[in-house]
Image (cartoon, rainbow, N blue to C red):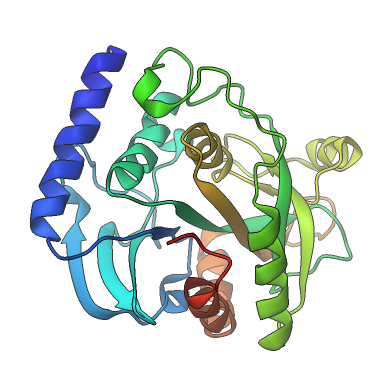
Amino acid sequence: MEPSEILRSVEHTAGWLKKIAAGFSPATAIIAGSGLGGALPRLEDRLSVSYKDIPGFPSTTVKGHAGELVFGRLGGRDAVIMRGRFHYYEGRPMSFIAFPIRVLRALGVKNLVLTAAVGSLKPGIKPGQLVVLKDHINLMGGNPLIGNHHEAFGEMFPDMNEPYDKALRREAVKLAKKARIRAVEGVYTAVTGPSYETPAEVKVYRMLGGDVAGMSVVPETIAARQMKLRVAGICWISNFASGISREALSHEEVLELGEKVSGKMRPLLEGLLKSKALKD
């Protein structure tokens, strides 16, 4: 698809959503990761829109991703939540991962909070804990900005010196402590999946400086930073990566632990939505 066609598609989808969600002007969006349905903020005046009804949005194919856009308010602020994301490993073109982020920006979103389930690359970062992202390493072999540049989306060569906003990171860590959740700052290693990593790969990722590994977040962050959105990445450790633990990994276990973590994570996300660190 040509850049001009992508722009028209973004504008069409955003225009459709503005009519459906008239009265909402969200400045902050949250993208929910696997198993975190119970962690989402309790928004008032909720309006849910299924992905299958949204122009340009395909249905999600991953268990644990509801596939709906939820508008609402918390603490006097409008927000929108993507309950389910699109992944490269589902067969989506890497460039498509930028599409919903661009739609969110067209709706007026200035802050993007990304959540995700990740595997720990280090024995000291244990399942059930949180990692607030400070940087990432893109090992996905692609970039969502390739071949679809349009000046409406931002610069062709966006700066990535601070992919995850420092003020939002500090606020997230502070809120985690207040909620008595163990949280550390760390580096996200992005891989394609859907297979989990081998023990040898885990050793390499750790040598490169990674703290956790996952199959999302980074394409969304790149697209968001091109459009100058402030990004916060909050990940929960669903498992130890291969070679650290001898237990076999399964997506069902990720979802099960996610339900336990959700109760702890909800007050953090609600506090972040109310925070002065966000841009209105």
